[in-house]
Amino acid sequence: MTALFPSWSTSAPHLVAVAAGRLAADTVIRGIKLVNVQSREVLEGWEVAIVQGRFAYVGPDASHCTGETTQVVEGGGRFLIPGLCDGHMHIESGMLTPAEFAAAVTPHGTTTMFTDPHEIANVLGLEGVRMMHDEAMMQPINIFTQMPSCAPSAPGLETTGYEIGPEDVVEAMTWPGIIGLGEMMNYPGVINGDPQMLAEMAATMDSGKTVGGHYASPDRGIAFHAYAAGGAADDHEGTAEADAISRVRQGMRSMLRLGSAWYDVESQITAITEKGLDPRNFLLCTDDCHSGTLVNEGHMNRVVRHAIECGCDPLIALQMATINTATHFGLERELGSIAPGRRADAILTSDLTTLPVEDVFARGVRVARAGQMLAECPHYPWPQAARDTVRLGKRLHADDFSIAAPAGANAVRAKVIGVVENQAPTKALSFELPVTEQRVQATGEVCQIALVERHRATGEVTNGFVSGFGYSGSMAIASSVAHDSHHMIVVGTDRAMMAAAANRLGEIGGGVTVWKDGVELALVELPIAGLMSDQPAAKVAEKAQAMVEAMEACGCTLNNAYMQHSLLALVVIPELRISDLGLVDVLKFELTDVLESNT
Image (tube, rainbow, N blue to C red):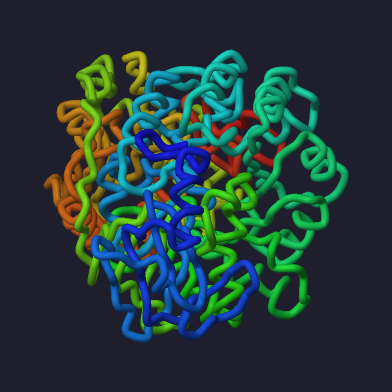
């Protein structure tokens, strides 16, 4: 339950009194077409009465609830729909704190988010999660926190700033805003019966809360069935219709995501639109959205519109972003629909297909209108410890980014991470690369990639190769956002510039920097855990747009390439990734050599 908001039991006498006409409502909204996601119908001329932030009366005439002190809102014949819910997302991916993220998405109609702060957990541990949780609890909308499950995401394949264990999960389950366990990314651990992973899931289920899933393997056979048996209640890693179907057949909710770079709705929603599966077991989510997307395109309203464009009935799409999500997390009596007792989270819109968000109410208060935030989003006092997290240990030089070749070799065959546009998975590629002065050279479509250790100031650098960005000329991009271990990830064609970019982030305490021909073209400062800015979304988006334009100036042609860049160290999504320990074959879940053999 959100702090400072009355529980249903506390509000019940007022709800009953208003519905019965004995007490005047705080607010009445009339002149509307009410979208009832419980029955999937539009009810013309219905009205709603609100008291203490909850719907008290929902019916054809609320005049008996209206008194002298009641604020009457005229709907003007528009649709009243429930506030939108994001079933799975990471606030840190927006480069924003919870307060600034809330301020960015509320005008787009998002009134509830189920967030997994596993990014900050990797940097600051349980204390970082608590900071995110506490700021989330301060907001005028509903932000529920899932306790991160996997830090590190794959033990033995990466090193994080902090580790999360079962005892941390047990403690977090007692916090008021914790709704469940964050995505269980260590699916090999679950499948193989890892005691720590199973203990975290058991602690969550014993507390009556929801275990988030993350099954990124294409194997839908015995391994998938074993993972489902472990207790994961949902999954957002599907990319094909068969993935969505396999999830719901095993009693999981299939989460269809549209983030800044992940376009997985269109390929899976045919399970509903063509195969006719029950839509109540499908949810919509964003997973990862950067600030530019939030400011310029929207949030969950963008996802709902996209689902409709993909052929989904508008009312079904709305269910997938409201009541389905609330039900999944056991909150269907608390939010997700316009019905008595529920939190009065609602949107006035003039069209159910294009979904313009004209007025937003959260807990009975108008919090946004015509794209402008009206409510305050308070900030947590982030301590200095949260701002001092980028520790390189030494000044880096070009030689730190060299890959030695076998003696006498003129060329080598190397394993190369292949970026796939608009998808999280990568491809394991193989290229023949030239050798100069016993150093392997990036060439053509292949760039160098490096992971720089930034938690313990070891000064260590892991090097490899990546393809698919389209970079050319002399360039480098460095970021202290590198899911999920969040070391510093650097991609470039020039080793000296890669060093300069990394050193720059060490000096400012984290962020993203793009260099071309020896000059810094763009910089996004992310001082909080090297992941977030505490500036407003519009300012961060402006800098992020400059970053995107700088990447394009370096030859990049990918859609939302930065999101691809930041996930190249995520060692739980196939096929090939890089970590501080080396190159990772995610299909085998083992470290592998960068160089295959001499040619």
